[in-house]
Image (cartoon, rainbow, N blue to C red; front, side, top):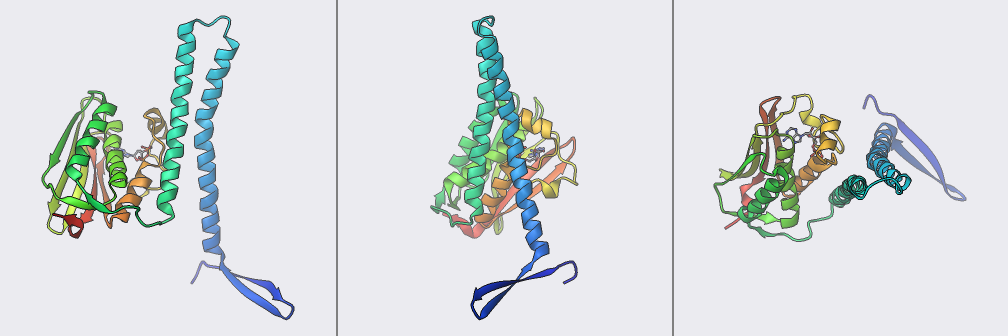
Length: 261
Ligand code: ADP
């Protein structure tokens, strides 16, 4: 096809035999570029909090004789926050890499989604700290065949994003319902919303609309990449509807044949 270059390597195999190996270098180069991007991104994401940690620790070391106990507590607290960020990043990277190996799900069982969503709501309430109204609307009590840990992580990720990208006073609605041959989990918020040009790229690793805001709220930039993997491992699709300034709705749709009564 046009736009592709076939590179042929002649590889010695034995005294009288040569192997011909061909490589589609456009594809190869693309993968290599993606790998380089990923390594650069990870390094950058790690370096930022590490610089901050070193900075605060140096401040404390240099000021040991002059700083009061409260100041020291303050600087160490800030350093510890950044260390927490690095931990979350590494945890998300490990989760994503485990999902990307494409290994089959460890354990498939009927998952009580209603109970799971009550826990998701509680976790979102903790992150919101009373700044939002968070409702849970379960119109189905059917259980979904899948991995409870993976589903929890995906569902909680979407609910916590809704909290993080919705200003104080906003509303968040978490829902679980069946519509014919599809069963869907949805999180709707009336937060900052997303411009249409960003929507197709949101599930890429480290893609963020606003880097500063994502950092401020403790994001790793890997959440939606993890969500997308988990949903597709459960034969589902992730749909994103959003209007800047109006809010967003993330819906994970699963085939109803995965329901267990
Ligand atoms: P992050 O850790 O940056 O939140 P995610 O992968 O979870 O990473 O999300 C990617 C980006 O998608 C975010 O940086 C943010 O710009 C956007 N986003 C995700 N959820 C929402 C939402 N509910 N409202 C507005 N923007 C969102």
